[in-house]
Length: 347
Image 1 (cartoon, rainbow, N blue to C red):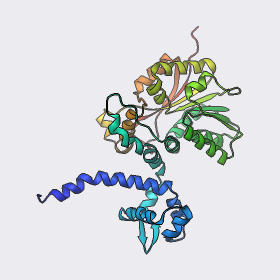
Image 2 (cartoon, helix red, strand yellow):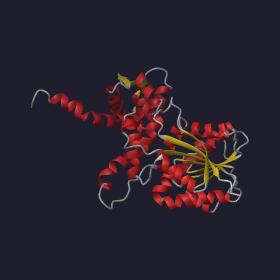
Image 3 (cartoon, rainbow, N blue to C red):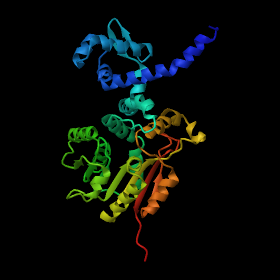
Image 4 (tube, helix red, strand yellow):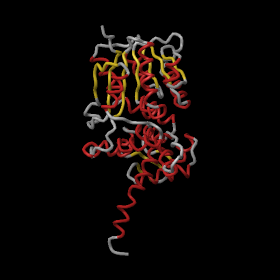
């Protein structure tokens, strides 16, 4: 081999190591090991840690030694201690829940899904819902609150269609003690997680959940559901991919017919995967490029800002305000937030 082979090999296989690192960080968080080490007073005996968490001690040691060699923590004399890197990664554990917990299996199916006529890839609904809602604390929820606050709106009853693990509903009820809320979530695992989260927050008397899709919920709204505000958080892209544009239009039109005075918040993503000026952005490389890839393989259809705005117009909706994410969180401008309402009939 030529003298440069080893360095080319090191550079060429580094993405494989990054794949393993991302997976092992997710397992560190999801298994409870990070939290147990984080609350420990000093180094923690690995065998005792494994016993406390009902884990296999030898395998846990292997995981921790891998992470130690990546500089995430320290292992010495059978005891483990978190390092500064572990804490810096932990700030963003929701992104690991979403991408690794929710979509690692999806990535493994891409080769098969490339074949003509192959089915779409599957995903892990509970982790997708949980990760997405936790990430929304930084983007979707601030956008929603900006739209409502700037318009002087304070919902008395909010309906979240595609509510995931119910974090939007919990957040609203925390901010507005007098409000009630409804949520519809089609994925059974995400629905069960939402029920667990609501009960843990003691909000079971204020939030009502239904295990249903947005379309089926609106086709026959439950008795007593009279929302003044509705949220579609990254949901229209799924309806568009799985049911088509006609269904999205019908759903929005039927919503306005059923609730003529309702305020509608839509959070969506601008399709900019072919725009180099956007895709060179740091967050686009580390987040949006992955997001765009996954949506192609999981039957979710992303569209451009002009598409969404034209669709809202054809659905009979007036755009009262539009925002994107705070620049301190995501300055790419890829996310879209709209406050909509049915247009007043022409005289």
